[in-house]
Each structure stands twice: as structure tokens, then as C-alpha cells.
Image (cartoon, rainbow, N blue to C red; front, side, top):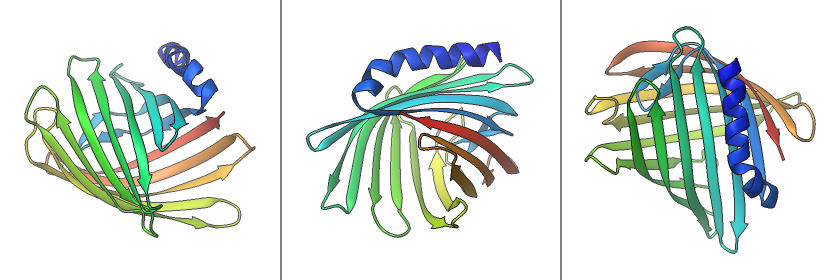
Length: 216
């Protein structure tokens, strides 16, 4: 818990000026496991993240920092990203950025990221990442849809992909799940989630999550 509080304080300090100028959010959560690009990175963990965005003419500048701290063995994963996005004809959104991921046990990498998404009913997207130091790629596609249940909002989605990460090559994976969220106040949202994940490098797992998101 002490490590989590230190992380929250540090990443909040990194973005406080930018968030003040634009819009930002802070999220605190729990996850039964941390799954990313076909691999389980942590077991039961607490997470913290800070994000911000700032519109400058036709561009939206975006940045985020996240921490996942395992409760049992002390494994930690940090993810930092920065980029810019723009919309075309209110239909296509294009994002270009950089993402740095670091596992405290020693692995880290910096990826160039391109993501294309459509503002349609199922919100389909295509994600491409390339390691800047090696010829390793991630290709991922997915879709999601939201439902207003009056008492809460339900989002159902899924994704499939292929990745060269964490010492694995051509690792096919998929993820399907649902998130139930509710606005507790104008600036606080609570959510719970379930996901089924699987890949060639692991057995299928059922993941549970819960989080509070604070917007400002």
C-alpha cells in the first residue's frame, strides 16, 4: 500500500500542470490479474493511473502513467504513454504516440504506437505497436458497445491480437469482457469488470476488476 501511495503521488505530480490546463483523471483500482498483449504480467494487484488531454486546434494531446503493484510477490509494472490524436469527418480517429513499459524485475521497452478507430456503433479499432529497439510488433483489433441500463452503464467488448513481447514470438491472444459503471457524483465513477483472456502462451483465465475514477 505504501508503494501504491508513493506511485499515485509521483505520477500526479508529473501531470498536474498539464491536467490543470486541459482535462484529466485519476484512477485507483484492483485486479485479480494484469493481462497485456497476450501475457499475464502480475497476479492479484492494486493499480493507479493518471491521464490528461489537451486540445490544440485540430489535435488532442494525450498522456498517461499507470502502475500495477502485485500484492503477493511485489512484482510491479509501470506504463507511460504520450501521443496525439485527430478526428477526420467525425468518423475516423487516428492516434500516434510512444509507450514505455517497464517491469521492475528488469524488462522494459519503448514502442511506437498507431491506432485507428471508427466512431460507429461497435467502435472498431486497429492497433499497431513496434518496439523501437527490436523488430517486434503487436497487431490488435477489437470492438465494443455500450448500453444505458438506467441504473448504470454496461460496456461489452472484445479484442484479438498477435504479439512479439516478453520473449514470445507470434503469440496469438484474445480477450472478451464486460464492465458495469456508474457515476457516483459529477466527477467520480465506480466500475466493476469481468474478462476472459487466453493466448498460446498461457491457459485461459477469468479476470475480475474494480476501480474508482476521479475526473477533473
